[in-house]
Image 1: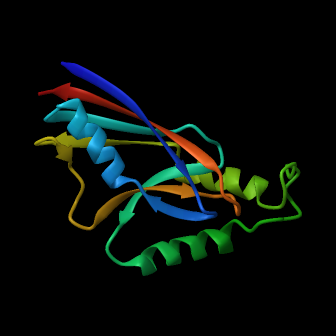
Image 2 (image 1 turned 30 degrees about the horizontal axis):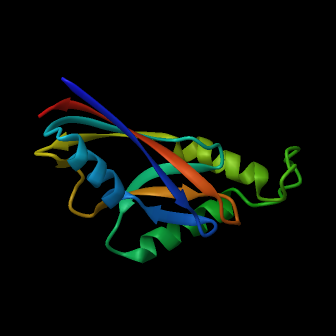
Image 3 (image 1 turned 90 degrees about the vertical axis):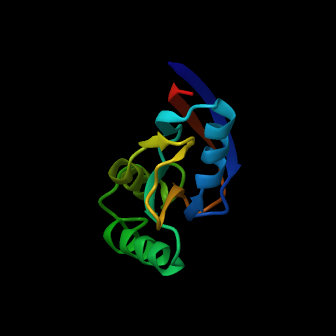
Length: 140
């Protein structure tokens, strides 16, 4: 049994998704693990990880639109707004979408479906530095 861990640091542009499938796939290749699990964890409370459609960009736009309608910035019911009107809404979005995912590794690759991609979703309206911890566990 092998364990390999690495970090991915990236700059977000602003609110929205960044596909990180290729970056995580490279870490798996570097690990040499052929069969096992890959756990990806976002070390932030206003960004999250999700797996969704990676072929049609309208899916990503529709997801963002849905989040904006359901979790508006500057809602007067929010007490927490120390960093601006997108502060509490970003925290709610990250709680609902989650900080981590576990994906099977099969034949040295992420065992994602044909149209699936792994995305970091920035929930703040401005750019930020984000760090992901990627842990691979399995056998060569």
